[in-house]
Image (cartoon, rainbow, N blue to C red; front, side):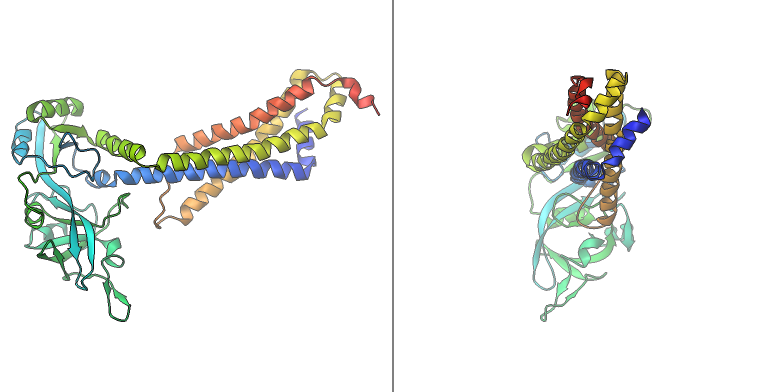
Length: 384
């Protein structure tokens, strides 16, 4: 019976290809758009991922995401260091300042000031120079990707020249020298990233009574991080998050305060709906066209259960092929855009989700077709 079901499916080449096309489109759109959404969500906390040394982030309680620079009193640092279970705690400054290039253009940049002595929270990967170069006076390290784009020098004739080691920039009327270039995880937020020492960042930033943005904490080995967060909150009155909690805080804020989730969700739902509609309508028409064969099998003694299995097998075979082609297309698209401004992430959970969507898209028309076959009278094959 399985062989007969597959011959029926493959025999009607036009409808078979239409079913595969609809399911492929559904699988491709669901997987691709959901993968792009997850890729952008990962970018929202790329700064946290690049600062791998910290187990716990101490911040102002009113801070809502990584770029929300709300300061704390400098005394918080020493109070955190006095909490039992803290191995070390280091300060970090993070803020947005205008940077003037040598050609006179200005660019708002994210300035990250790391501890002068330990350089904790410094660039994750250097491409030119050394992290230790930040200890030199008036030195900064820039994102390599921006050296040839937003930091490039524009000549009078319109040609550009990339920023080089030793070039100077002006940050809030402070002249600094480019001491190195680094590679960071592509951020979701748009400002270029510049690293400096903590003391240098405080000199460049507009002076305020409170300047401390984060305290990066390393827990003593074996200490529960959630318990340590609770002790830090009790001792300082500030917020304390594990790295995963801080990632979640940032991602949830972006989802709630922007339309990114709704926009991608609409595309996923429309893709699933349109693909399912094409495949479902075609599969239902395919069943109607083959009613005489199902009636003949029923007249020969085939049970309703056997006919249901045939229809389900046809739907699963078509769904499996459509899912494989769609997911393969999404994976190929991800490879093609790798290294571009577009981000895409395809975890196994997403593949399971898209597989479930395609199974649903197959089973609904299959069950509707099976209901039609179940009501079929065997005598229909002898009419006309």
